Image (tube, rainbow, N blue to C red):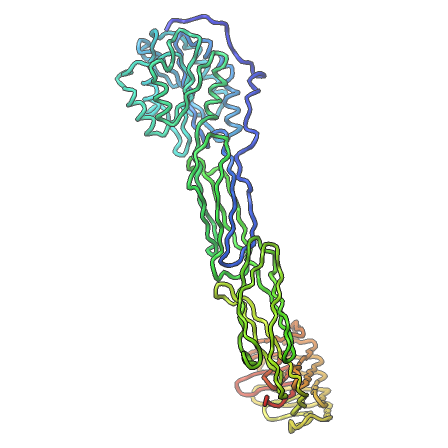
Length: 592
């Protein structure tokens, strides 16, 4: 094309700074969600994904017509090359840029030139656009050979990165020869499609080039590569149009679930959305908890991909499965009582807990009214109560019990015990006894040794040494006492030797008491400091088992049956000899 002289239309850097990046960066809203859902339940969350204004990891080829009529356009792009690359890099720091030019076949070797291979060096890009101006001229009115240029870029001219978004930002003012250096329009499009290159076309107005899309070639290339044909632009507008074209490409948003707990289920719709870069799309996810999932915290992550590429657009999901807490109760014959059922945290969605009564020593129908049903906790509700009814009778008997079992999806999540108190008269304690120390059949300081009807009795011994098999014991300050409905045994200090281990224990005491017929039997014990081979062992008032070379040392053991309670402060179970220190027992009569 002939060279034309136009008033130079170069946008200054200050003016071009008005080109803006998006007000909202690429993001997922909300970035995290936290639900409390019961087993078998589900919740729905809407995810808003704001796409990046520039497609991810872009490889952008700036392709310009450098024939004579384009000099003012080339000046505009060269003057604003840094602004174009800066804004793209601000949106996508991994971006790379290449620079290429084309002319007409009459220009010989200059018909297509790669001025700069892919780079993130802005100065190299600007220098390559300067070479456009240095090379400007030539051409054949009113055609060019851009079909050949597109074919070359789609085949061998540019070394695109494997995971890049490939874009040609192209401007010109004239149609192309077809075929162009032996390449047809369809061959060029097929080559671009094979490399997944999208084309942005900026037709230039105000020159004598005849129009970039004069024969619909630019429309066909952009439509079939998923690109965009921009409106006609003057020389002063071309840099702006290039950047706007990059921002107007469509992107496809898909999703994948990762690092998801096996107790959860997820379903996200739709499978994908296609929108213009920078726009926001919505997805809906249904998050479920499988039946039988125990209480706990479970997590899941959803990644959103832009054109198949991770962009750090992640939503983290936390699902809390609440625990169920229940409390037992007492009720008199012929009356009712309530059981409290609590969730340990307020639910986000309705939570269902099934309950049913289960026989113990009490029998449904004759002792209590059977019941079964569902409790539904609404969002933010944490406590409910259920009333249960006992049956009146007129014979005295031992207190009886039944249970209420709570389940979710067939999994037991709690059990409450209800005690039916007899109201037909008291039953006296049957017997009681207390032993300060017992090794095999040897007993020292035993109160009420015959286990006869409970009575006031006491025994005390200053010290004792006992030995059997592999175990020997030295005990000081032995005492045993029984009363009308209680027994108590104690020892001041104990030294146990078993093989090469020495166990030293401070003050030991056990207590039991009972009021038969009222369901009140209790046992407790205390054990002072414990040392094994001189090394202190931490113990409290609860049961503790300590393994020794010859067996197990057990502290604070309470053994209950339907009619008795036995408390052992200290016991040593071995294969050949059993040792018990501070043992007390109370027994009630069997239920009639």
